[in-house]
Length: 344
Image (cartoon, rainbow, N blue to C red):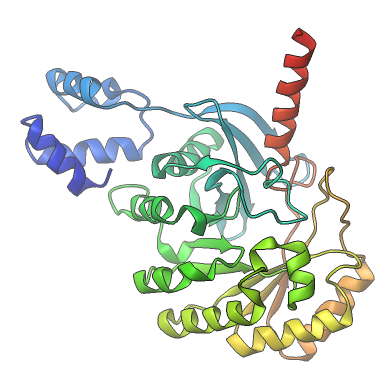
């Protein structure tokens, strides 16, 4: 709940207005029980117990990379479902990659998150907990957020927008919008609505192919929309917000890493003034795809740079801790299934 909503509620509890920000600040520190709110009188804490609940996610698994210190969490939620969160350290600060849904309905052919489909949307509080409790457990101050974990953020639009308001609030975690990136597979019907909010976050479009034939093979979300429509939506978003879009592009051997793909990608990026972020594909056991070779990657980059495209290659962090989104959750589900099978 945002402070103004708490204020309306607290009227019913006959609480003075200043209690609102006291409670909101305590929640932003990650208290696990109302009794931890030590500057509140006990009768009021009792009322909070009667009318509200605080649930903290439980760490089902925690993996720490021996290579680069990346931390991957598998959090158990109140209903027993699980989502993944990753804490990564860079020179500019610590970034948390959070999930926005339990599972995913988008069906991308190279992704572990979508295996098994969508279970449910995450609540705003659950997304906030991913950030807050990752910070508390890791001991690392989170300065940046990427919504690039399990799920499609624009498929959980209203909850994601409320989460952004909460995590950005100056009396909460106070993480600036310019330090937040939202990744989408291209649900263009939401672009105008997102642009209208003028949030000044970074919109990252998971492009992964510059042509309809390849992209529709990899990403069912492309069907019925198409790359041309996606580019028009990107242009409109950039014009409205002035915020440069980033194209995320997973390099897949023999699928989307040819010279033809590079030249067309360069045209697409130049047309909308987009930055291109190439991603060495993380192998997923259930998928047949493999990462591009070093030679193909270098040739691809050379073509983009030669065409004047701003291009970077994402560092591979946490390669020894189930780096791909959805892998840890999938393995945990498989273990539960195996255990139940053994019981019978």
